[in-house]
Length: 192
Image 1: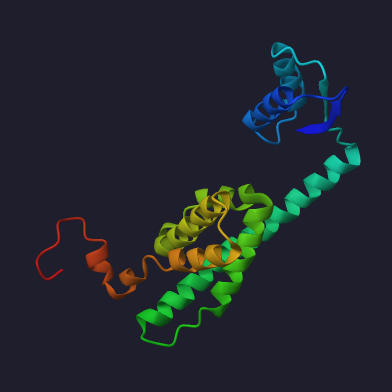
Image 2: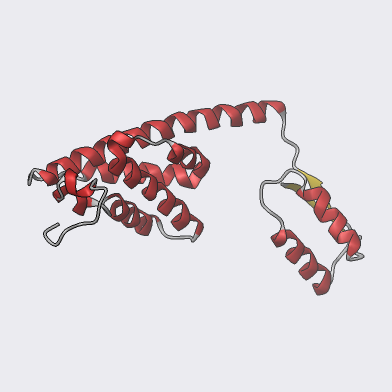
């Protein structure tokens, strides 16, 4: 992280270009970036630009930790609520009932918001495995991964919402296949 950029004097295009390329090359959110960038500028014989690290006060660290804790709790709630709702909707489809996906749409919107703020809060939950509800758990995990990738690719919120809903139902066809066929350990016969 860089807290301050000081231009000691006017800089020409070459110096500015070198500085910008050096800045873009660094991984964001690393505390030592200011030190590393200063070293790189010295190596390039640029003394007209100096960087200072971001100073984070103790109360800011504490607030950030609290916010992360709250986000993790929200993420858990969304994660498990999504799994339960996917199960409800797929069960309705399986029974040829009207499936109401509005609740899932709201959950996808909340997931998108959380991923935009702190994708790690949800990505960490994808390691949870529930073999009794594998299909629903898997659909939720794939949706989280897809939304995180879509967010990194710069997709609009509308596109992310469509992606999230689509991915949640990528295995909906399985709901009409008998479990003994789905879980069959041997090769399928012609009828299957």
